[in-house]
Image (cartoon, rainbow, N blue to C red; front, side, top):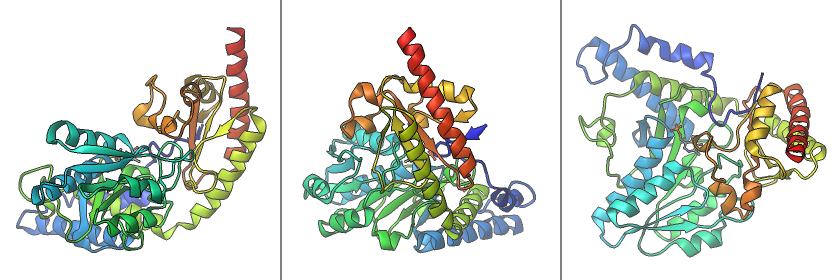
Length: 385
Ligand code: PLP
């Protein structure tokens, strides 16, 4: 089997498992307990926070551990917008890009439905990028928060986050960026990016599912979503997932220290894209041709159905997806592709290939041949049927 769906989930790295194991076994204490087991857990949590902060280029106190990317996005969008409006009733709008993950989009829609916010959707160009002009047009004096993802999960397009953050800052609007897909592939220094909040998730990085973090810049107001014992400095109550935090911090540090994989994988990705475009008549690359994640190659194959191509590819031993795992099985064309101006019939033929850092040239050669064969056979069957 050739696994090309790493944007959905990655296996847990051995080093990560080894680092978290003690906190699932002997060192199982609650970090809030005042005895030696509790102290050991608290020390592990503090160490994990230090390492995560180092990887993100921020202070340890600016890291909030969460249950994953979805919670980090919810906390950023709802937490910052609600806190800012509580301080100033006029701040009743949020601006989000048209290609956000549902964790951001649905958080904004929740603010609209239940809290009376207006949602301004920032359009993207045909490559899925938000331009500075588009962001500038969406920001208003009443905008409490803007959210533009770092890299898109369906097409891999990377946003010019540093420029967008500088623009938002010049208008006094905090910018949140969902870096769930970018983490491990792109620089994550939050000071260089200039963002006010940034979400990451463990299971895209070689840590387990169910752990993530939100960077929140020092004095940013944040209303907690989960109330209770006041853990995470009151920003996220609930007994901390010590093993998960250790896993996330370990995976992040490993990813930062081995980022040379990015260049190697970007070269392999370019070879794979070229082979698919040359081998499959009518294939269309989606997303930005150059400013894209090293790990994502995404296409539409007009004249097929994306789901049939996936099934055929799996029969041939290649595992990939039609876009995002969240939308898998849905008949709706991808909102991301529609926002990029892709026709809805074509959008329904989308297939995404996403790579682990360990992907090899031989695997991608084999996968490109399988794509050629799978699309050919789906088209032949379609024509016959
Ligand atoms: N944001 C993006 C861009 C994602 O790709 C994902 C997961 O696929 C999430 C958020 C949600 O993260 P999690 O699965 O950790 O809740």
